[in-house]
Amino acid sequence: MGNCLSRRKAVTEDGRDDGQELSSFEPELGIPPRFSACSILYRAGIPASVWLEDALAYHDVPTLVFDLFLLVPDVDAAARALVSAGYQRGELSLALSPIRQFDNLYIPLRTESQHATTDAESAPQSPEIDETRVILLPAKEWFHELPAAPEDMVDWFPTLPQLLTALIAKWLSLEEGDRDLRLRIAVFLGYIYEYLDTVKVPRFEQQLPQQFRTFHSDQVQGINAADLGTFRCQEYYMRHIGQHYPVVA
Image 1 (cartoon, rainbow, N blue to C red):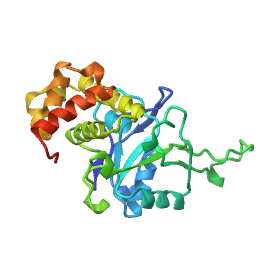
Image 2 (tube, rainbow, N blue to C red):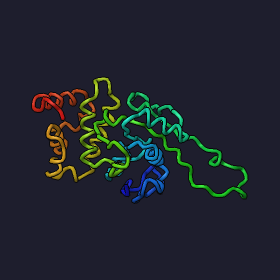
Image 3 (tube, one colour):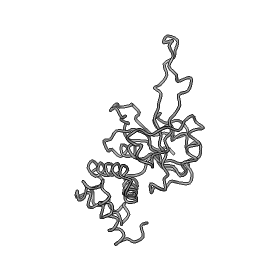
Image 4 (cartoon, rainbow, N blue to C red):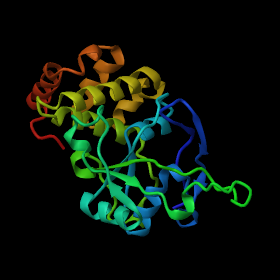
């Protein structure tokens, strides 16, 4: 699977370019430190897809990256693989703690060789320790299909139509009480339509499921764009789909 992990350098939460310009690679030969969890899952036979901020950044949306979100077919199996590789269960930040879907957070532990030493003269220079926190998400609940085996993957990242389709589907599926996640997805959708001219090209909508094309057309025109964070807006499009497309594929 010799595919490009990302087309741009990652920008960290503090605005720092972390220097990880992600180029073509073979998973067996190594991976940039921020995405080391992908390599761990690959070796464990678990397919994964990079999601949310990192996926947006891959498609040239100017966003910061925070925790690394990964879609996996089985969260429990993926968690066991990470724990076996030295990760431990962590606690969500205050900003994410209200979002119950983000509960599966794992943090890499420092090894003895990574601990700082007081003997500056004798200590060899080691690369910067990557402490990227990983949040595992069930791919099925995020409406993204993963291959049965990692060997069948064609990229670590979703295509733009796949990402947009999944975000729309997830937004539509939220319960009324999922306020924080609804607002977050609304921001992601807003970024896509604000910054990516690709989605505004008429032929792009042909790559989206038919039941989502009215929503897409409205966003391209700026209709209801300011209301995406409300359950009222979500209900409006749910009714439209229910009336015109009773069975959502």
